[in-house]
Image 1 (cartoon, rainbow, N blue to C red):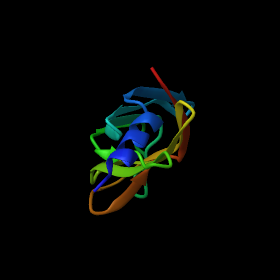
Image 2 (image 1 turned 120 degrees about the vertical axis):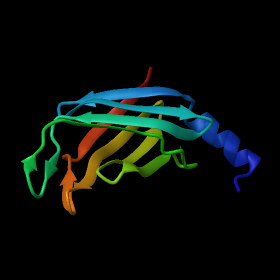
Image 3 (image 1 turned 60 degrees about the horizontal axis):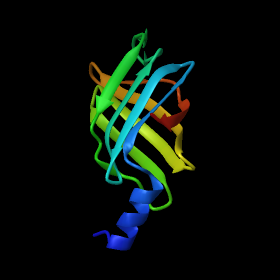
Length: 125
């Protein structure tokens, strides 16, 4: 259970809105925050490699993690279907969200897949 004071500080800490950014290996990363929660997240990466099969090429994932922004600004989640999930380790600070994201998953009998670790900074749009 979250008390009212904590709820107000979280909402003030990370304002609701649409946050977007890009990097050379991920041309598109987006988060939507509403009432102190990440309600939608998506990432598109140029490389998604599997242990069996090598580089499968570009990959995209869109998820609805429903993850709270912690009182210290931390935003951590892993969400999506088994074949492709979005893993995020981010922090909200001074109007921006920064950290890293990675697409991970499994295909065809347990072959592990992942994108490179993507360092990203997202700005409110």
